[in-house]
Every structure is written in structure tokens, then in C-alpha cells.
Image (cartoon, rainbow, N blue to C red; front, side, top):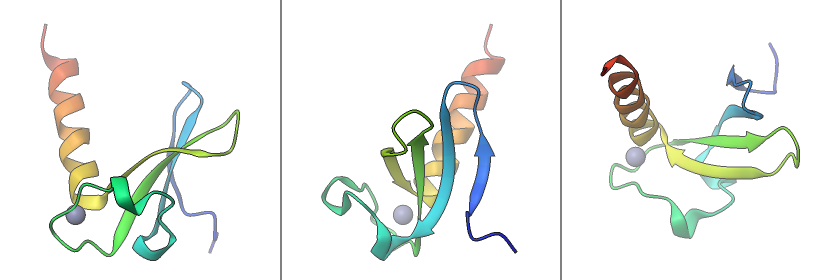
Length: 73
Ligand SMILES: [Zn+2]
């Protein structure tokens, strides 16, 4: 089992990582009213720093929004 926790990779220079909420880098900016236990981080391949964090529910919502947007002509 890998402890990297990577859940995907983008050619855009980011990879996504699932972390525990306590490990969240910017808890003050986290949009979450569901008490999610995990947070998804988008980490820059260039800097290695988390650029974006959102809870697992919001991450799933955003993924659906993005997929819908792609389908729209
Ligand atoms: Zn949440």
C-alpha cells in the first residue's frame, strides 16, 4: 500500500491527494459544512505545495460540475 495517497494525475501540473482533515494546510479556507473526515488537495508538481483544498463532498461536486461542463457543447 502506497502512503502517497495520490488519487489522480493531471498533465496540467497538478496531482490530487486525499488527506485527513487534521492535515489540512488551510483549514480557515476550507468550505465544508458536512464535517468531512477527508480533504482533497491539489498539489502543484512544480512547487510541491498544495494550491487548492476542498472536502471530499465538495471535490465530488466539483468533479461532476467539471464533467458536465466538458460535455456541454
Ligand atoms: Zn465536506
